[in-house]
Length: 314
Image (cartoon, rainbow, N blue to C red; front, top):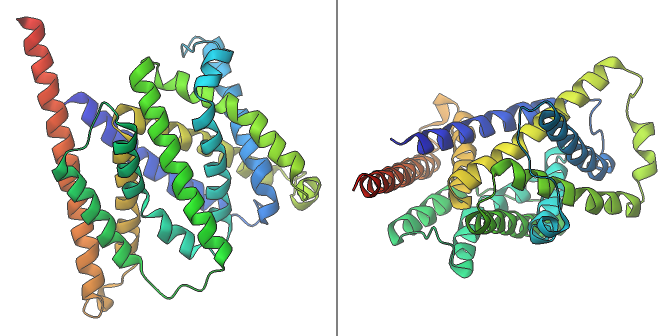
């Protein structure tokens, strides 16, 4: 396999690990005790991202292009979608009634596939890969079907999150293909763009003044956990951008479906396997489809690199 495909797989694996650590830290009883904290937390995450990248740039550990109004305008639409997606995702993580939200999120690969065709990206999806995406999504969705008792607002949030996530990933992939900017530059520009949007959301939110009274800000343990959450959030967002721009938005969403399938498979105890045969079949088909999809993408990438090397030598 090529080095790019290996790096993409590593980025996706790190992204999945970061999600698990991120969620585990958010479960701490002092953190995000209510949904009132979500808009302000998203703003703090964006601000910390900008500060950390600036510090790394000043220390000459990263090379970042200075922010400009031109680049900010170009990445404005994906930044808006990214802002709303961040708030909705954090709401789902901190909410106990988000089963329907998570179920709808499994259809993100199909939405991304549709947008890939609509925007006519340079990296097109073959009919075989499109079939695999359809198979993986449907089998994963069948495994996740249950008796949903969520409110209608949860499903509305799920549909909006589906639209925002697939849109911002496709847009940054398209603009990355056209501009050939670095991953760090794209992430840096989008992070700066999100700050005023999230600040406006915080100012308009009626529960924002109660944020400081709801947390244990005088506790060092609370501050330590809160700092860890922020750092993991920054890392997670960067890995999502990295995997998307190194491979594609579709590959990123397929990896997330595979992560969901593996978690569901792990939650089935061995003595329940006989009674959960349809569920097991759907999960195994979905996971196998992801494996075949990734093999095809890696083979395609490796073949393209060999052709480029032959053209250079000739």
